[in-house]
Image 1 (tube, rainbow, N blue to C red):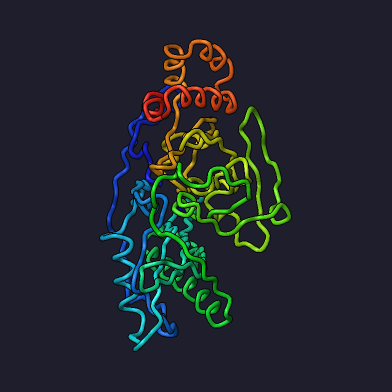
Image 2: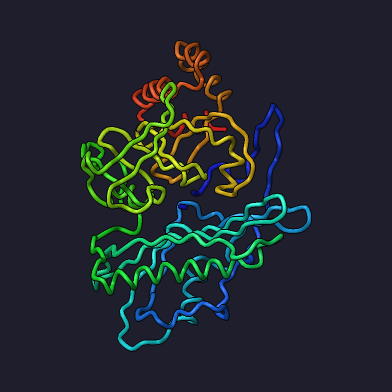
Amino acid sequence: MFFKKAFFLSFIYFSGFSVFSQVAVEKSFALNPKDSENFQAFSFQIDEVIDNRFDKTSIGIIQRGTANTRFFLDFETSLPQEIKWYLERKMPEIENARKYTLRVNEFFIKEVTKAFNEDGIATLNVDFLTKDTSGNYYFLGNYVANIWNDSKSLDVTGKHTQRAAKALKSCFSGFQKDFENGTLENREILVEKAGSFINNKLDDSEAKLFQTYVDFYNWNPVSDLGEEEVTIHPMYYEDGFEKYEISFQNKKSPSKYFIWWDGSHYYINSEVFSESKYYVKSYLIGTYLLFNENLKSNYYLAMGKSGLFYFSKQRHYLFSIEEGIIYQLKDKNIKKYLKEFLPDYYKAYKKEPDNTQLLNEILLKLYDTNGDLRNTVQNIQG
């Protein structure tokens, strides 16, 4: 699915030991126009590709050699350039063809190691947009494909390009079918962050669903949602750490949306930054969202949805809406900061460090006092 991480290539803490985890980036991924995928049947062309991924640091993790050494995988060039180059060679030249913009929300390669083989998976989430002569964009439809390797293998790395091409073709087929059936949308959207998030409709009491980070930042929802259109199943609650299974009537898989606003709180899709399939309740403090999640370490977050083993520890995070960055908060740094600046809260926090509602109260007080959280975040992250 769909972040530039403040803790990328950072120290990790596990059982009291500090380990420097610097995973190399291998810029070797390239789509192959000589593959067997046939794009000749499509009666349109793509004249622009927009990289709308939340995490642009890599497209996944691969494993090489007998020791399964891990590498971040990325494009040889850039995502827009690579996809545009590939499509120019695969799609037919058609005079007066309909031209569209392809907005890529997720392009993710994954390898899952099992006892005697590996699974290779390519996930693609794209929007088709059209643009008028004034440069305004209109959303037509969203398409998602998950392509697994066709046969079991001891090493699936070599066929990632084939799976990615199959995913791309699957999304194109879905779009062409909707075009032929006349079921495309035509909703104006912004494709870049505009202005400041604080100026958006934070007082909006109508429930809304946002597909991507940029859509959320610009307050450009998929649609307004009535109570009858949302089904909520509480999964866990403790001291403000709340997670829910949420489904939206007449919408695609709930895992493909970035955030849901119920009129009073934001619920972040955990699958954006992990493989957990639920929404986490968060608390707005200025232009930050505080949430508590057992994502198990900044190492796991840096690795993204890698399918790697991870260990359990509940932690607090602040999502900077303005920056598009998730900051992991360090318990030791929070205590040190509170002991110096808010000694009364220091005692309460020391007793209940996992209490999200308490930390929200503390951060709100600091925000009201300072008018900003940036300095505080720099002191308590870790």
